[in-house]
Image (cartoon, rainbow, N blue to C red; front, side, top):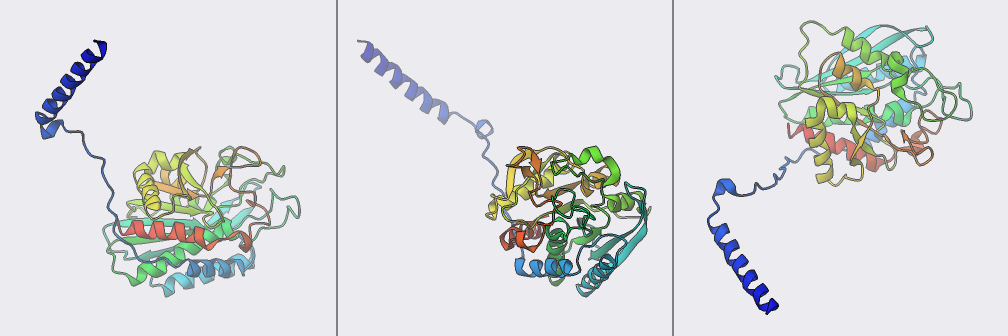
Length: 337
């Protein structure tokens, strides 16, 4: 008898369900999840980007106020000019954490400068003047294949490809100077960049404080920092989420769509001080940071890789697959703005 009642009840529920469905209006239907449709971008040549990294590394450490730094800066200017950019340089003087007066040389290239829609792409091109997280030769400058050269290499390749295409948007490419001259830490452990306050990113701070009154602000910006290491992880960093969450989320979705989800992680990372910090807060240009920033298996804290600020930051740690993932994702996103 109990089984019979259950069968009757089940039948009534099924009839009621069909009746309810037939009377549901379109406005009552559950909205479907939006599927992103992406325009295919041009091909990013990671081998070419790697060569641009090698060229920078061949100059040696690019520490401000050295001949290596000056020669590499001249080369960057010539490369941007050869790619059809309108090139300008912002020069001045900044004061380092130790009171040293350093020349600053921000190198700026513009493509399609008359476009009403402009996007900022940036990276720093200087290198760390000491290896304060190494156990050997800690007072010697690092070569900075990843920390400095990788972001610049990817942007040079994007500029090379973009200059040959017919996109109507404008690109402002900035290579910031004196980013990596922050106060040292000699205990080889993770250090919180925010605790160093404004001793970092002196070039981008100089740029923000000295913008021309008639400067046309880009729609948004993308900063590339340490984007070439093997098995790199790029989380959604908090300042990027706060100021440029819309573009951040779309780029990460695009990266996953292109097959690079192993790099563009959905996890959230704490805020850090990088060039985008000042671009967001001072220049008020919404800018996100694609940066190698992961939980360290050695300290169980957020870190930038065991090679960070050591002499291991050389060409041996650079991988073509990582350059491809970052470069192709950013380049394709430019076609989808």
